[in-house]
Image (cartoon, rainbow, N blue to C red; front, side):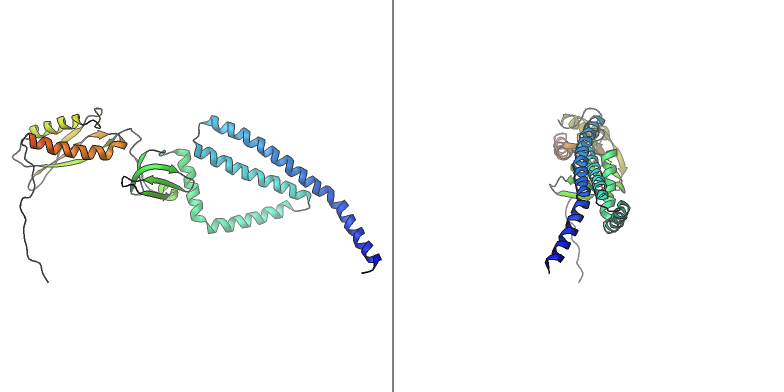
Length: 274
């Protein structure tokens, strides 16, 4: 490469730098100013969301989503100073977004459902619920899933799309949950006496609520006995303690009052085939 050719390349490079330097400078300035404006806007948005009364999950999601959109807008604005066609970039982003959305359509469904759960709040953290046939306490509500803790100390991660497409039973919404206790009684036993013993026993249990009062009645007449149903009310967190304590004290009360309970006595032995 001769000296004359080298000077020619250097001159072209200098011309390019002189013509392109202002564009780079404008792009850098627009990025700096744009991100500063985004920071201020997000601060104002955060204050407004705090005053709106929305829960932390919703406000966090809105702030993150708005921040990403504003930063993308700033980058596109800066790219326009460098000669990039914004419409072409938007087209590429739209095509990429479509491809990603098609590949992650299940996750997007969970995302949309998570937004619905956070906005309409059919349950909150700490509630006892039955979701998608699963019973437990709500430990956390995430964008894509709801975390339940079962009475058996198991952790259930339920996709939010399953939550919104199924029936949600919130046992904590009313502040009390009703127990269903079945008791069998022989036909010869006095129902008024048995009912009085059951009611008196349930009222002695600390976790059983006085309001509403326990309900006791005859559910059905079986072939060998009468099936009674006792329905005391407890707080959702006392569900299992109330169940176990009610059964324990009812058995003790029946024994103390010499009340007979219908059950099969003895063992029937039959043949077993090949």
